[in-house]
Image 1 (spheres, rainbow, N blue to C red):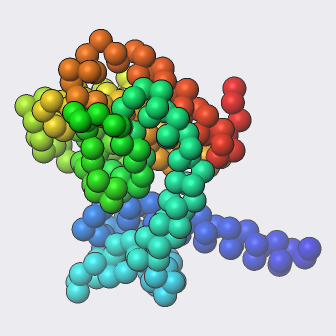
Image 2: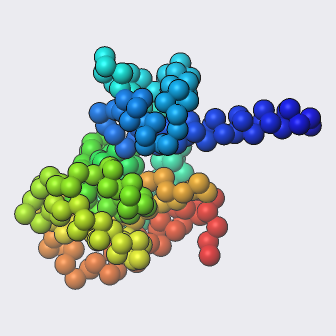
Length: 257
């Protein structure tokens, strides 16, 4: 390989890395960002950001968010994500069923979408009194077990950009202070799972943990339970969930340690 070819290859890798950085940054802002704001966030010249955004826009990976030059993630990413979620559901659904049967409760599979979690699959429990969300539905991440499990995979500086200082209260138990939530997410990282103690819906508690593939976190599995069945069973639910997500991660190529 000539020196020129090596230089071109290195330049191409750098452009891809910069494009990925821009897309990740756009993913933290639902209302989009201007070129100047993007350039400041990713610490690149505005002209460089403009060239990359133009290329991403031509591929449908970024789109104009407003007439005054703001940009957001494009529809092609949604299509690609949908394909990935379909494959993910196929891979882990047998293990979702197994977990639901083991704990005799509803089990949900969800992904992080900005500051919300979107439900992509579910195995419902047979109980008359049960917690059921809808596939395709979306809940705030900061007050749900699956959401907090996924938020805990992000760095604190990213969380401060993603979440407002004052978080919406879904119930009197919701953590509404961002710094208090970030402090709790440190415990989630330590324990490997998150708990929702009637923070999203009164009468419902939940436990959630992250599934990884070889590139990192891809989804969360959660077990929502009526409070009367959750109290006193948290430890056994957590152990069953952690065993299940470890097996799901192994199915997706993650080596067990």
